Image 1 (cartoon, rainbow, N blue to C red):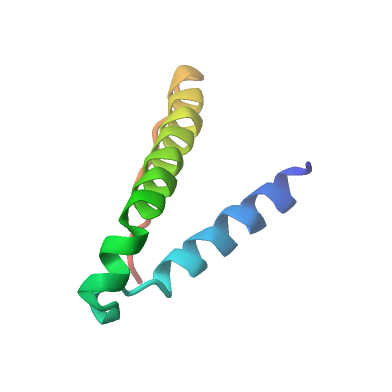
Image 2 (cartoon, rainbow, N blue to C red; image 1 turned 90 degrees about the horizontal axis):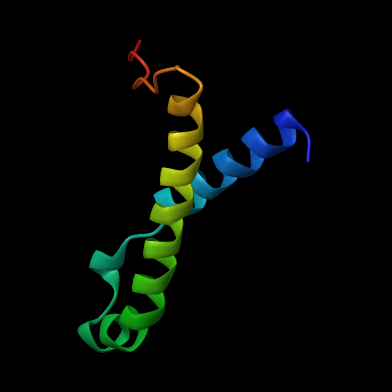
Amino acid sequence: MGTNEAIARLDAAVCALGDLDVSVWSDDVLKDQLGELSAVLCALDAVLSKVADGVRARGLRIEEPISA
């Protein structure tokens, strides 16, 4: 996968997660989906940590973008 494609896919994932609003889910739906949601969030955290660690291992910093 090319660099631009990888960044585009990461951006698409951010957009998808940005559209997720569990506050509108009923308690029953949230309870039913909690195991799967937890697994996905933990897997996402692990992958993001791996990418971030790879950047830091090369001596670079990950910085929050400055808002315009």
